[in-house]
Image (cartoon, rainbow, N blue to C red; front, side, top):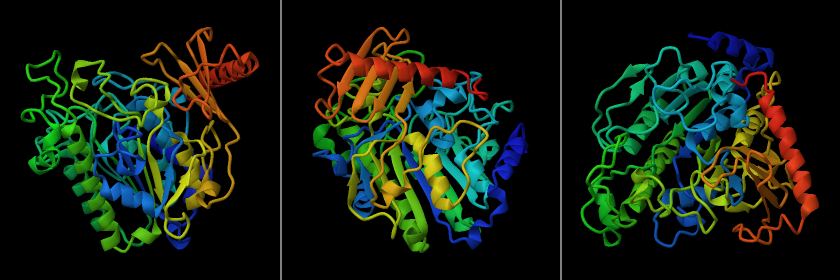
Length: 465
């Protein structure tokens, strides 16, 4: 084991997880699927009038669909840090997306879902996008195996050159060079192969952070053909990571973006079908969500051109603390425990996942550090459940805000000085049209004080780098 992995596993032992024989307790397997930049309105089950997403729509019909699920951040790396640790991402030091060859990483001292479940007897694997360090080839950075994954196939942040025939995947620290195929198929192929090779006597945790539908897009011809009437000209993907716009950057309509989501949906369907084939579906807790809101036709960077994500009408988009940047689709399926076709509008956030999975697997959540998430298993059982703490965000967004807070039906946005403030009653203005900070000064002041307290607590976190 490298770096601080031994210390972290000892910490897990201290909270009692490793002493439990998971296979003898009849605990569920856990499958977490994370889409990249999928918007709230980008699925048929969330109201898209054209997109075909039959597998995710069926997953929603078989489980619970969340209409007020929030990503922990409007960008990818911080959302992933929060999802895996149950902690507000500023505590971990992952404040924004992590450029290649930079020093930011999810510190080896952090306890992830994988580390927690591995210590309780689970087999663990991840296949897909890591994006929690400066590179999968940097020996000084914690890699997926340092964060509890027995087996992993990953790329850093995006495929090079694009979704077709990528050449920057690593498997268990080894670079693989060019792989023929498309990223969704490659990632799910690895997940299916691992499921077939696993020890059937142990439960598993499988984390599948997909690359789709992040820019830039490349799709198999048959998927582009499904939406050809919505595409102008021939699909022509450009290479990721270029220093300047190439000549073929052009808006061709939404067809390729929609095709990419349908292709992603097909790959998710393959993975779910494998659970069925292996008779694992009834004993597997499945969680699906997006890491942040969509890129919409409000293109702000040249590489976003030709992305046509939908926020379902919510204000803002990826990079924003408005709802469009952080409210995203989420689904839980757990046969026999979660009622099929159920829907909840109770606010839930990505950092709630760790304590919730800890609860359903009978594992103790870390007690030696602040964990911000709340266990929402009662909500999954159909019981009346409301969070005891507000949902809090820190992020320098494209609108000049740094803080956001949702407390009940109220949402506050504020800049770093806490002098520029907007306040919304989401029950009356779900699309954040009517700022009522001037009309409700007492509520605004109360929420500003909550932000001050939470910001100070996060800044003083003992693990913060």
